[in-house]
Amino acid sequence: MIDNDDDAYRARVKENYSFSEWAGHTKRGDRQVRITDFKLAAEEISEWKLAEREDLPPSSRQRQIVRYVFNSGGKGRRLVSTVFECNSVIDAHESLIDVVMTYMAQKLPRCGEKGLEIGDICFAGHGDVNVSVIFARFNILAEIQSVGSDPASVDSFARSVDEMVDRSYQGSQA
Image (cartoon, rainbow, N blue to C red; front, top):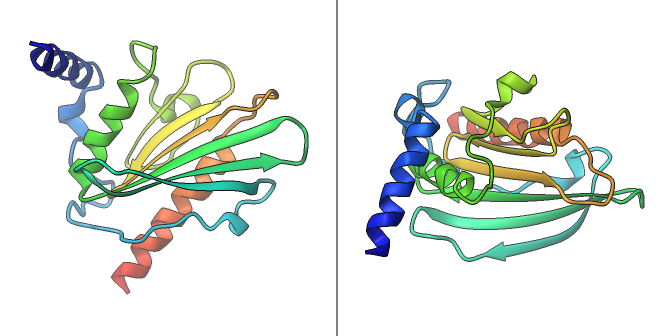
């Protein structure tokens, strides 16, 4: 009985996020791309210093999940970035649904509405400052959240992560 309720809830969330319009699609049109062994290059992210890195157990949709914690200068600013290397583009999009299902908001705005044009599909938190961003680019899903006592915009950090994913894709095409 619970499985049916979970399936019905998942179906409602997919409908609410117009999943059928973007599922399995990339901006470059390459649905088969598969980036492997992706790692955040922490040294490329200015202002933020890597404090922790933890491997998490993947689900059947993912090859690996890594959680990174970054600090910025002792100012109470802290980010958590969880990077999911999924088996395929559609698995990254299904995983995105898994993540948004954990949020309390009924629907998150698209990042473009908040002035952040990244990923193949991207959602941000509510509020004037983007303190939470979830995006998929190819088969990589990234969730980035400001969790420190001094909330910080995650826009620049999210752009850096997206650029790293894009470079990984370009490197795989060379």
